[in-house]
Length: 188
Image (cartoon, rainbow, N blue to C red):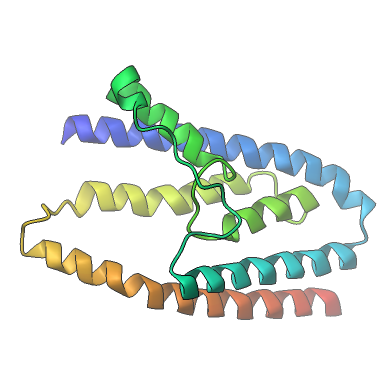
């Protein structure tokens, strides 16, 4: 367990540094944009960005594929052989922490990056992005360790099959919240 924990923590630290750095940089750009755009225009653009991201996620769910605006690449797997496990997880974490460098399941990460560039999302939103990615991943890796041939492996398979329905419900809920919040902000 100790070597696995060390690798998970190294990956998590690298992911957090990359995502926090990227979103902080986007937030700096956003502070300049924030004053240039009227608040109503920024909120309307935000609504369009969020609705577009949710539509893309709906399309991905319908087609059972990756986010359509993501790069179709991963960190090369041979870095494990070249660098060894402890340095390879650092490279994987840094690469994965950047929103635009590798496969994404959801367009919402792109939307949050756009909102930071607009000055609507705060510069520190990368910390939330990292936590939202890393907490369930780390918890799953450390707690729900099931060998594939065990009876509990069937439970994991069942949960993975249900993820599409849960993702659809999350898209509809997020769209409703985005519309309500944007409408409320525009009225005030």
